[in-house]
Image 1: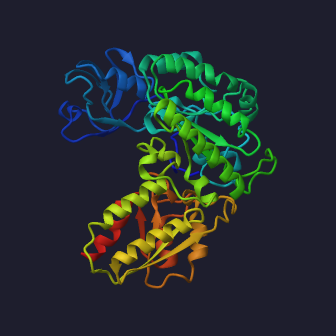
Image 2: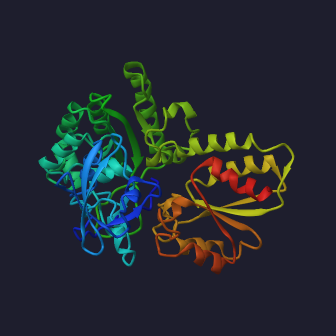
Image 3: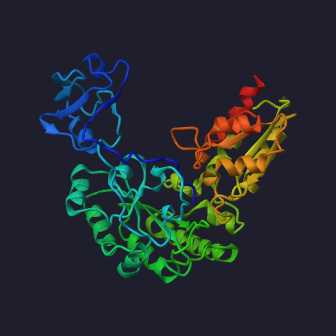
Length: 450
C-alpha cells in the first residue's frame, strides 16, 4: 500500500482568493492579479472548484473580480470553448474539504501516533478530490444532492473504495449505516455514463473468499463504466490499541489471493476482453512471485494505487539504459534508501545499472519502519528519524538517493516533520530526490557523467 503524502487544506474562509496568474494568460491581459478575489461567473456564485471549472468553459463569460483595494471589476471575456483563463486559487478546492464520518476497521489515519502534523489526521471523503486528484472515496458521506451534482457535471473518472458490495458487511467494515447503499449509487453512476475505478482493501477472513467473489461479480456487471478494480492488502501500524483486531497477509495467503485474481483475469479476458481486476505490487512481493508483464497491466489504470509501479519502473530503467553508451564510466558512490518491501527489487535495479555503467557503486539500504512498526514496509511511510538512525555511520563520501514518495508532495518534508535539509546536515551528505520514474532515476547518473 503506497501512500501519497498529499495533505489537504482543511481551512476555507469563504473567499475565492486568486493565488497565481499564469504568464501571458487571458487573466494577465485583463489585469487580474494575485490577491484578487473571484466573486462570480455570469452572476453565479462560485461555491467550489467544480462550479468554477463548469462555468468557465463557455466561449463568452462575464466574471466579477474584487481587487485588493475593494473595487469590483466586471470583465467580459471572449475565448475558445473550454479554454482556461489562467488562474489558480489559494485553496485548490475553493471550499473546505469534506470530512469522512466512517470508522473503518482498517483506517490508516486511526493508526497514526499522536504529535504529528494536524493535517495528517484529516480524513477526506470528497468526490471533488477524487475527480481532481485521484483520491478514493467511499460514497458514504454523499447526500442525494451531491450525487446528483456528480451526475450533472459528469465528474468522470471517479475513484471509489468499495471493499465489499454486501450491504451488511460493508456497514460493519466502515461502521457507517449508509455504507450498504454503495451498489445502488454505483448503478446510478453507471446509468449516467460516469467512469469509475474501484479499489478493495482486503482484510484476511473479512472480505476475501466468497465475499470477494461476490463483489467482483457485482462490479463486473457494471463494466465498462466500472473499468478496473484494484485489490490491495490492509496495512497495519503498531498503534492499534483499542482498534479492531485484524490480521495481515503473509506468503501463503498472498499466494492464495494471487491465484484467485489470476484465475479471474483469465475469465474476464475471455468474457469482456480485459483482465479487469489487478493486484497491488505488495501481494506479489509477499508471495515472492514474478510480476506480470508490462502489457498485462493494460495501461496501468491504477498506477497511483500501487498497481504496476514496480513493473513500470523496471521497464523505464531498461529503456533508459539503452541510451547509455557501452563502457560508460562514473567514479561515484551512492546509497539508495528504500522501504523493506522494495529492497530486493531495488537491489536488482542497482545491479542492472552498475553492469552498464562501469565504476559506479550503488549500495541499497532497506529502512525498517520503527516509527509505525515493522509491519509497515512501503517506502512512502519511511520517516526522517528512521532514515537518520539507520544510516548513521554508513555514509562516507556517498550521495544519498531517496524516493520522492517519502516526502510531502509539495515540500521536502518527511511525515515526522524532519526535512531534507536536516538529513543533509545530520548525515553530512547530499540528498538526491528521485521521482518514481525509471527514466528520471537513470538521469541522476547520466547528469553526473557529464
